[in-house]
Image (cartoon, rainbow, N blue to C red; front, side):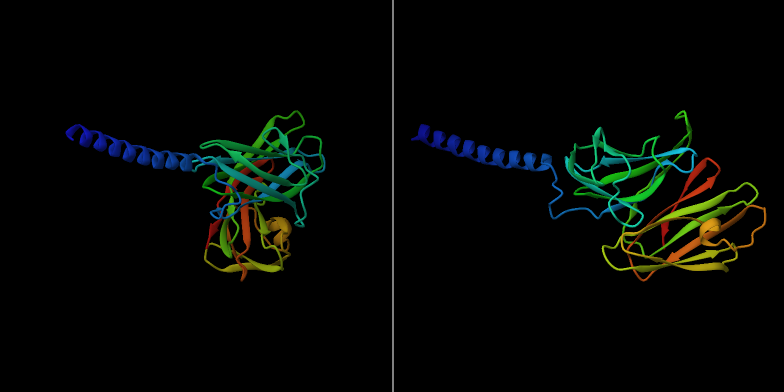
Length: 279
């Protein structure tokens, strides 16, 4: 009887171990399973507000490089869509994900390993200059950055700027403005109305160091549309400015929480990214 009791106890202990091990293995498998883009836990889309590709009027060549880092604890799917300025598919710019071509501006879900990186490139030296924007969707956490490269006719790097991806749902934000007329230094920005339908008005106010509004303009943007503007050349061409360096800021506001934005300070071939702060 004593031997039987010991055997029974060993059997029960073994069963408990096997059951627990099974649950542990299930947990291990669930922690390493690929996060699917069709899952309910999809992260909010991140926007690449400015894609520049090719050469404008025989000038330097631009290439846009997007880096997506999988910062989640497991492999995950990533998808992306790229658009022209009017919101139609970006089908007139060479797009690649690693070494694979992207057709009609759409990258179907592709898996990135834990801590892995996916590189998307837009542009080629031989194409006319094009502008656009992109939307990246992930099912887990990620880090997304964009590098805008400017190269000469021999592919020598002239300048580059790195900008972070933008949230898709801003209704108000602030951009600092650097301006020096004598050297051509000015601030440029790109904005996208990320809505799938309906137009929206984005109000832009240029504010000086005293807090006074010195110029204002309403920008009407259709759903899915993109605009890239220099402050003086495109937004406020009638503005009278001196040659001395000035520090101002742009304040944007809308009743529609559907905007994404990025900004650069540009002087000749020199590019420097500027922060876009939700307000």
